Length: 243
Ligand SMILES: [Zn+2]
Image 1: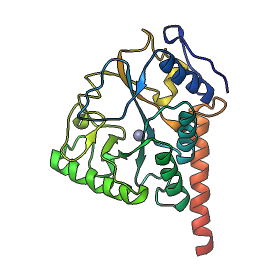
Image 2: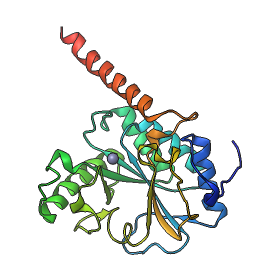
Image 3: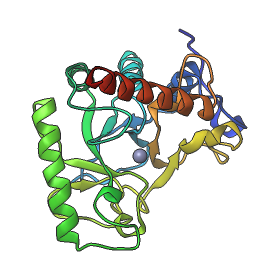
């Protein structure tokens, strides 16, 4: 393991390698940042990073990242989808991974897909959103052994941004979104764009997708193709014995 850190202001781009990610975390540590959970009673202050992981692709990649963070004494929040076509959270090996991530000291949270319930231009009532999210939180709680209270939204429609809901903590609530800086690694954009052109912000929410980071940099198109093939294999394996 390298012990390197990165100067954020001099970082013109970033390959999506795990050692680069670790250097980034070390750089926050070296600059005296602390890693905090999403706590609606504690507004994030200067020098705090709310590190969030949306698990869109792979629980295995999430577990690898969680282990690496543990070695660096970094705590973060892992958000999982129920009903994702690429992984089944109820499979025993996935439940074990979920529980392991929790044991490593990370927060388990829900990644909620509004699109399975409502069209993006069909804004439901806040009560309807809260009811569905809390239903899914209860299911996730049964799997992990303790009920989480935080949810992030998958491909968030505008009507979940910058608002609070009853019954759960929204990672896009004003306190964690418009109230502080917000950065994400979506679509591997840091390969081209400067992640922190003005240095590290005073306080920020940092969204990192574990499925995009590997030992060696892998382009997004290859990662997606691998998942597509794996899902196809599973579907074939299900149909084959049915004749
Ligand atoms: Zn997502």
